[in-house]
Amino acid sequence: MKTRTNIDNIKIKLEKDTNIIVGQAHFIKTTEDLYEALVTSSPVIKFGIAFNEASGPRLVRTDGNDDVLVRASSEIAKKIGCGHIFVVLIKNAYPINVLNRIKALDEVLSIYVATANDISVIVADDSNQGRGVIGVIDGKSPLGLENQEDKDKRKKFLRDIGYKR
Image (cartoon, rainbow, N blue to C red; front, side, top):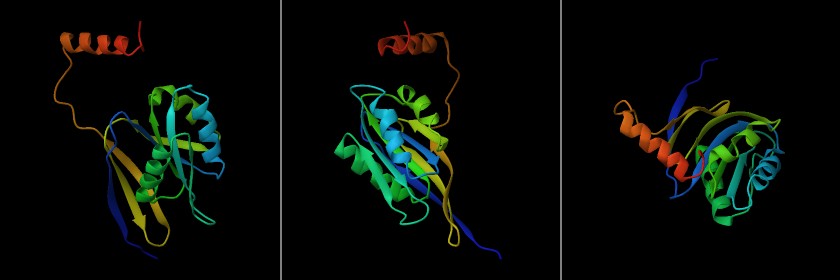
């Protein structure tokens, strides 16, 4: 039986000083495990989590320690509309602070993106089976090659924010 698959481009615009992580997981305990991984990563991190169930009641499961970020992550998850995806929004931290903890969770299958950029989530929609993430567009194409001045600025920036000595 042939079916037609439609491709949707879901645009996600982030608030200032917010990072997003979008991934795929496979089990209802994802929401609680993501919460534990994030809350123990930093005493100042603020976050919201949303996880789309793919079967059963097919709810958007939510958690977090910041109501605004919880609401925003659930709106993004609903907008993407794919089962078994999760959306994490964070403030006062960077994805680098939490990605290894998230990837180490037994039910996490993959991370599509971790960024502070606005993104486009490319979704395949098969009316018989459902929706699935094909990929994520994050940022624009390069404009040139880094020169020595650019390298010096990059190195200074990393030291200014405390990621290098």
